[in-house]
Image (cartoon, rainbow, N blue to C red):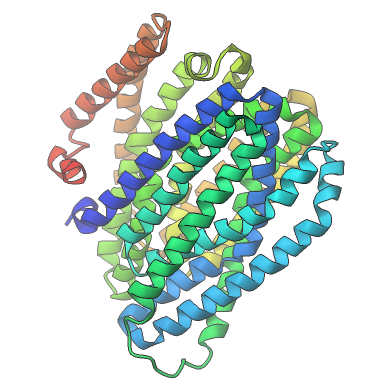
Length: 487
């Protein structure tokens, strides 16, 4: 059975939710870039970068650890599920309180550090975003453990769709960047409350109450530590560069870098959807002792990842200038070389997301955390070294270099758990590169005719058609299987 058939409607729900979320997020990103001055836009996303780093510590990995033990005990001992949920939720509330208090104490110091007085009130206001976004994350991970992907997808849609509606609405009535941040907060409040009520009614009392298993709380807590290290390293890795760009250059440069990273985030929708549904499934197969089945699932997921993201990155490199010019305006053209460099990062990120999240579920969170911690520190050091010399482009180069190391390391640890056919992987990768080369030539030759949004979309469409034709002809895509997602 193929991975698409195995995951079925779960993958479709998550994929649809993320597509809608990324489209609404894209509308929000472009609209904010047009409605706000670059300095305001940069200040908003500098604030969000700092808040999201804080959220990493308020989560403390407890959501993922809760999800892992829900997934495990659903088969072993369902009576323990209410205890797992209750402990995870209370622990999450404790960490939210601690992190918010710390930010209230140090927010002015952070604003002084980057010489941005307006950041002071943004961070003060942002403590609410930390609290409710952390709860949204806990809900999502808990539902993932139940393999309730439909419920999780709906919560995700409410959160991300709400951001667009409320943030854009408040900006349009004249509240500026402050209104945009308020929109993010309102969306997280609504989605977290709905999610908590849904879990309470649908899953909390689904099993008979029993005495809690000895050491269960301790095991959940202990497993959360490598997860929080990995999550903190990832969050810092993703956002410390934004903070350092603001520190070494200015908020306008943050806007250039943020736009490029957001475009990379947008194209991560397919792999994020696949990984969210795939990770509990591969854990289930390995728990049952079906290592060959788990290996086949991983190989197939990796093959789709390569087939999608290598051509996507190539197209993004070729079309980066017209994409920035058409969607964001000429004032953001300095972001073009940053976007081109980060296109390579997009391929690395897709592979590491697929592999790394699976490692968390199968018990390799500690190893992943160590690697991520090392590469995140290396990324920060490289940013400090390259930003004064190369400007914002240096931050992109640092990200590509360090994430290359992280990606190779995650693949190595996955190979210790399951047997991946190396010769098959080499042959498949060669075919993907050949398809990418032909598609890139077609797109490059047509790119000179791009003058507006319609012509840009048309040429992207030609590239997609070329990629589809070559992939199907080469036998790398099974049309019948892919149609299962669409139906």
